[in-house]
Image 1 (cartoon, rainbow, N blue to C red):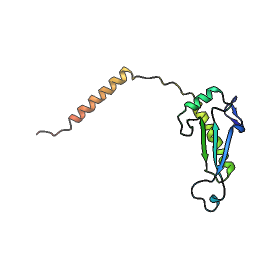
Image 2 (image 1 turned 60 degrees about the horizontal axis):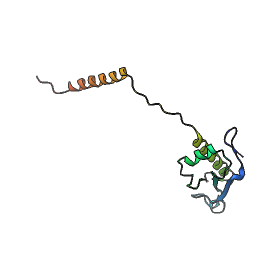
Image 3 (image 1 turned 30 degrees about the vertical axis):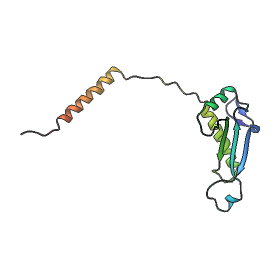
Length: 137
C-alpha cells in the first residue's frame, strides 16, 4: 500500500510492475537478470479522489501518457526489489508534486523612493563617466 497523505492511499493491486533487462554496462549479469522495473499506474481507473486524478491528468509531465497512464522506469539499482522501491517512491513524488498547491503570486511595484534612488544613482554614474574623457591643456 502506497501512502500519499493521511487520508489517501493507493493499494498495491493498482500498481502494475513489469520486470525487464536494464540498459547499459553491467558485465555478464546484465544479460541474464531482469532487474529493471516498468511501473504502470492508470490514473482514471485508480481509487484516488477526483481532485488528485484531475491534478495528475492536468500535470505537464512526460511520464504521464495521453491515456492517463503513468509509466516510470527504474533501473538504477542492481536488484529488482531496490528498483521496485525506487519506482514506487518516484510515483509518490510525482503525485505529491502534481497536487501541491502553489502560492498565488502577488505583483509588486518598487516604492517611489526606491525608484528615485535608482534614477539618482544612474545620473551620478553617468556624470562620473562623462568626466573620464581627454583633458585639454
